[in-house]
Every structure is written in C-alpha cells, then in structure tokens.
Length: 166
Image (cartoon, rainbow, N blue to C red):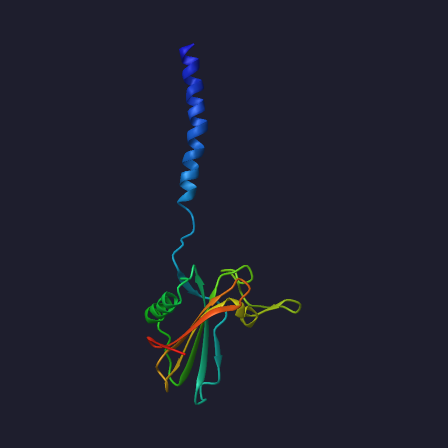
C-alpha cells in the first residue's frame, strides 16, 4: 500500500512541477525590452551619380523598443551613428528611424509587386527620428518625435548637435 501511495505522490508531483519548470524556462526566452537598432535591408537610396557635385544618401533603420523620452531617443540614435559611421565625399546624408508597428513589422521589406506596392514612404506614421548632415554642413541635425498609435505627432524636438532648437 505504501509503494502505491509513493508512486501516486510522485506522479502528482511530476504533473505539478514539470509544467511549472517549463513555464519558468519559457519565461526566460522573452524578447528583450532593451532598445535596439538595425538597418532595414533593401532600402538604401543613393540619389545622383558619381560625377555629380553632391550625392544624397538615404538610409532607413528600425528601432525596437525605442526610448519614450525624446532626449533619450536622440542620445540613443546619436550613439548608434557614432558606433556605425556613415561617411562619404560630397554627400548629403539623411538617416530615418522607424518604430516597429503592425503596419511596419521588424521583418518588413519593400514590395514593388504590381497590385501591392509597399514602400517606406507609406510608413511615415512610424517615422520617429531623423538625422541629416552634409560635407558642407557637418553639424548633425536631429528631429525626434513622440507619435500616437495612428502616427499623429504629439511632440517634436529638434537638435543641432546637442543644442535644442525651435
């Protein structure tokens, strides 16, 4: 009788503790809430030809879990650009940063199909920051936005380097 009860007790403990252990392991696999930036593939644009006086380079990035504070957002993208420099001669540089959304998921890619064109210009509601500069005006200009879910601008801050303007 004692052997049967210990088997039943072991079975009950297994039923209770194994799912709890699995839930605990699954919890550690949650996506990070830390902000992260990556370049959106297949979206770089170069306007002008090599012989032209000025080339425009446009690059587009996704920010996962962007800081909500606009000064922190500006500092975050500034640090990213310092760690991942964009350079060139006689260039105007325009970097755009987008938030992840239902319309612009992290694996988004441009679509030029006949019936379903989807380009980044269709996703301006998710644009939350930009940086511009050129060889002739090397001071970086930052625009950062707090936007509603629908893309309406709730607050905008503009910086030239570290100086708040407007």
